[in-house]
Every structure is written in structure tokens, then in C-alpha cells.
Image (cartoon, rainbow over all chains, first blue to last red; front, side, top):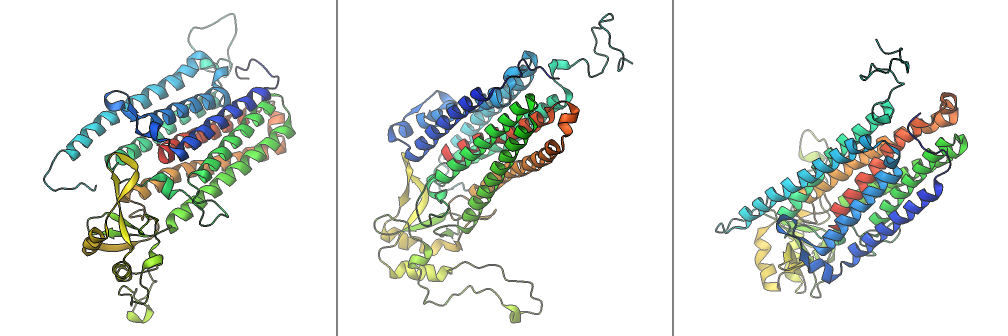
Length: 124
Length: 330
């Protein structure tokens, strides 16, 4: 048997997390449909993380949802700490590393493409 | 050597094998499922990063998601941006919840409850898959139609008020088409017709020139306002007619009527790859569902198998949450 600390029903917490997930999704969708001008046009962040406030909200809410799915639904909270770190730590590190690298490279490509090149338009 | 020998008296520091000792405290199957999930999510991460790269490289000419994904079933012609994909997200989250409830019932060894919740999960998965297929169908068939220029740009058409026009709305169909596909008696060996567009390029051009209200809406966003695309004046629109090359309706892996060529390609690839994972998930759930009904896990004494496929199903949900955010929202 695996490391379960309780056999009593967990349904209350499950439904509670479902409510959180639904609320987060509804907020994301409403913001995505309305796209309030203030959030859309205000850009914050530094260097390669310079995104509009709206995009920051989407990304943060998505990470919160991912946390809830992994922690509560996939029951990572019930596993041994070392096991959790071997998954969550590896995943987080590699994904964050890749995103940072691609943002840096993307910024470079963007600068090259948008520097004046006398009439060439890049379509690929 | 240590496979069958495991006694407290000779507590070894090195694991000699055997299921009595569990590295990380997790069973073999569960650990392997987690590591598979880890690897697969990195694959999806790679694809999404590639999408992000292309999308921001062509940020000024990328289609506006609200204008592409605005269909809702049984509401033909109604502009419903994002509602259906939000519903799909909700369905998948709900099927994840029923899956967790099945796992939870498994911990309490309640066979019938497990079966019920697994059935609900399977149905939720099938509804999601059907919805995704419906979205693909709308995407492939297209809405308004567009024209591609010799340089590869996509041109849409609007009327004087800026309202989008379908090609059929203004194309002059009284003009004879000059692009009819070859028919069976045109050659010695006939395999089939390539499907043609509903109107031909010369009909579109004739319609554009005859109707003084029609203008071109380019694929480029207004500088400083990513909500809107640049609309050319009547004179500028007429001046671009010489560049028209193809009529594009719907979407394929090569070109699409919505904007940059790679937009549809990436959409099909990433959502298709995800849909493939959902299909496999449904298949696994069906197999485990039948095993539950047959009492396999009652005999085994543990519903851990339900938990393992549950992990896979949640992974599929997790990926969708990210795909949804980066494709439709950002």
C-alpha cells in the first residue's frame, strides 16, 4: 500500500478545490473576453519579462491552477517530500530554464528582424 | 539476492530489491507514471515554447483569437468569442474532479462508486474530444474567407463600417470562374478533383472593384493597439489587387484564412497532440473501468490502478490548462 495517511472520505476538499478551479477559470475567461483596456495596454516587468498586465494575470492564474491540480487532484500532498521534489523540482527548474532561454533568444531575433533592412519583410 | 530476503534484524543500508522497500515511499507503477508525466509535460512545454516563439516573432500579423474562435454549437452566426473553449475547459476540469472522486472511492474500497465516477470521467472525456473535433471542423471550414497575396499576406474584407464581409457577400458570381478544376474527361487518368474554393479569385476581384463599400483589412495590427487590424482605404485596397494570388477558405497545414501560415499549423499540431493524449486517456479509463466492474481490484485488494490512470488523466487536464492559456488567452 502506498503512503496514504487517511482512508476516510476526502470529498469535501475535492469539491472545494473544484470550486476554486472553476472560479479561476471563469475569471480568466471573463478577462480574456473583455480584455479591459487598462490591463491590456499597461506593460510591467523588466527586460525579457516585459508583458502586459493582462498576460501576467493569465500566467499567474494558470500557475495557481496547475498547483491545485498537482497538489490536490494528483495527490502530491500525500507523497513523501523527496518524491515530490524529484518531480515538481525537476519540472519547475527545466520549464523555467527553457522559458527564460527562449525569451532571451526571442528578444534577440525580434531585434534582428525589426532592425532596418531596407525593404525586406520577414514572413517566415 | 535480496529479492526475497527482508528482515528487520538485518536492516541493510543498500536496497537489495523487493517490493517491501519502496524508494521515495511510492510504488513502482505510481513512480513510473509520475516520471512519464514529467517527461511528457516537458515535450508539451517544448511545443508551447515553439508556439510562443512564432507567435511573438510575428506579433503584428498574428490573428486575434477572439475573431477566430467565436463559434458556439446551435448558435449559427452568433459571435461568441471564447465561450465554447471555456466550456471545454470546464468540462475537462469537471471530468478531473470525477476522476479524483473515483480514486477517493477506491481508497474506501467502494466498488460501485468507483465505477460510477469512472463512467462520468469517460463521458466527460468523450464530450471534450467531440468538442475539440467540432472546433477543428469550424476551423477547417473557415468563416469569412480571405485572399492570400503573392508575398504570403492574408487580406480580409470589410465594408464601409468596418464590419467583416464573407467572400460570398461581395464576390461577383456572374463573372465566369477562370480556375475550374479539371474534370474526368479532361485527361486520360482521373483520380479525383482537388476541392476548389466557393468563389474564384477573378470573381473576388470583380466584386471588389464593382462594390465601392468593400475595403481590405490587412493582417497587421494597428501600431500600439493589438485589438485592431489596419484597414486600408478604398484607394489603397484597389491598389493591392495586383498582389492577389489565392482565395483561401478555412485552414489547412499550409495556409489558413485567419492570418500567418504557421498559425493553423501550430494549432492543429498542438491541440491534435493534446487530443491524441486525451484519446489514449479515454482508452485507458475504459479498460480500467471494465476491470473495476469485473472486480479485479476488489480481488487485488487495492484500487491503486485507478489512482495511476487518474494521474494520467490529471496530467491531460494540466496540459490543457496551459494550452488554453497560451493559445486562446495570451
